[in-house]
Length: 326
Ligand code: SF4
Image (cartoon, rainbow, N blue to C red):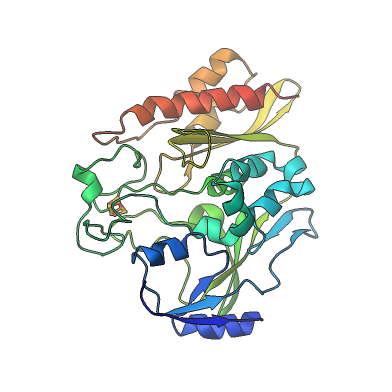
């Protein structure tokens, strides 16, 4: 591990001052410390923000939920409001990592976590994300777990967060504070596709800090859930996943929100699936026909062609589960 300085801050102003001069924020440390041990990340200065007052889930004036950036994954998953209003978030969190990691890792850190591409974590491999301009070893390497949607010639890595898929499907908002003040960014625009600059993964500016993720109150009750398909049933990243939220009234689907994980370079919204559901009555044939649209635009690699069919089946199964809820 490379030498670094460590500063623990107690208020946001101190954090921003340290961040502005290049300090890297750390809270639970479950991603960054791993990467520092492997010398993938070599920050010169760490700024410990775990003492900031960003550790509560609160109901907003308009009835939405604001999840502080330092709320742990396990706290957020267990919160009664999250469980009852947005089970898709609870389920996504509970299907992530291990219990020990969920007790340490924060919501802010979870959406900032870096890819699990093995070449990214191997400092001897070519990787445009870790070393811009060096190439992408995954393109001609073993790419079974990589993206089939949203990739570029520079990078085909998936985004690893399950919670991010749930936040994307609910059209959450990320609250930021920085040297220039506060701002809000729609979750769907917060994470960036790789394009020619895969090293840039979010819209954060130098020194900006995530303060919360907010889910707006929904005018109509949504039934929702998250399904994750992986190589083993514990402590594993998604091969495919589906986040589904539906509003069904009078036997008709009035609103549909569907997103996928494990297949895209960012959490992947599925508007073609949503369009096929709205205004229809739930049925086996509807789930199947809508899910058939899930992989539109997919560009599989040599070893991950199976993800195209698996994605459709994952979405179909989760539509059936959520659509059948009472
Ligand atoms: Fe690096 Fe992305 Fe290629 Fe993986 S897929 S080796 S992260 S550039």
